[in-house]
Length: 196
Length: 173
Image (tube, one colour):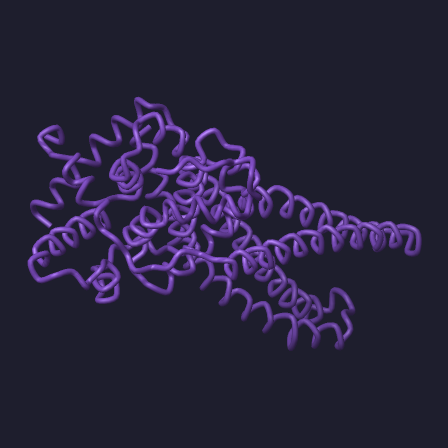
């Protein structure tokens, strides 16, 4: 069917179309250089924050021996590693567009979108767990099983739980958007896969 | 097309020259990929930025034009994927003016046909649109395979499918 199509004539017609857009000049070049420097500075800043987090983790290990110190240090270490990983594995390669095939790029975006979606759900679950924890504290106090201080109960009831509720609602909005994005990316990925 | 002397100039000057040479092809691709003028301007800047970032490799590339098209198409695909803008929109008045509207009255029919072609290309699925846009700019199967990083056989299959889709769109809207 497509063979009957005079594609050469169509291509000729296509190439005759001219547009009134202007080509970039020296000003655009300067702007691109500025943006590039800014991006590089942002990446170095991320690396620096990862280093600061690692130093803080080591300091915590030395300054606060015991479970609290170890736990805080572990969290900081994880934060430092994930900051460095995201900066190196996600931000840097995605900007090197010459290293990608279009199909690979879409697959990559789909994977990161899936990860974000999981991450949002995990945070949402954590917020729900905190609300449950607040409720449990009240129950324990009600049944007089343990003596949780009133300050702690009020802190969890009046500050943590409402913030968690707001967080769950806002994350739900983000999840809705990400799910739509994922659907679109999956359709695009499928579209590319069909031709290969 | 003029062959650029890649050794005599800086990578940035080389990029500007290469862009000038392919300016119309870039603009046509952008028109087909993004209907919204403001988003198209952003996309153009992103492409220029990505090219600037790869200016040294671009200058050293065996086929700088193919290299330019690869970056342009990848930035465009990324833009569409991130912005969820892959929804077909009709050609707005701005595009109709952008496709040179100062042509003499006897060329109005031809201009309408061009707009019909642009509309059809805009409506193609992204994978088909990519391959058609490259073929319309007279790139051969080997170059398209290099740009899209797929096998030549896959290019032929996709091109055939894209031509069929384009023909149907032009005939039936």
